[in-house]
Length: 144
Image (tube, rainbow, N blue to C red; front, side):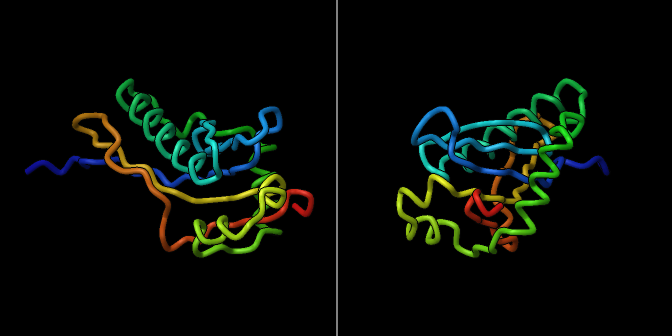
């Protein structure tokens, strides 16, 4: 009987903000593995960071490295703590974002927790998605 785990599971935090240098783009940063991605909308940026984080985790595990050794710098975690203290809980992220105007979006910061699973036999991402029981957090950056 094989008692080796079949999958490695990682729980990660991501911060999503409008890009400073490219209007209309969103930057997503997975702090646990210090992976940065982008998208045309906040939801696309969330999806892209999930995918990029899963690829990085798979690659690191295949090469015998711990993906969590990539952890973002302390100042990024401190910024996450400040956001968590001041942001409001958002149960339905898609609905929340659809109600915002373009101007409101440009000052928005989002925080999401998600999980990444890697199949240890193939070293391929098995799953990467938001943790449904954990609401997203949102706030206007000027207030955060």
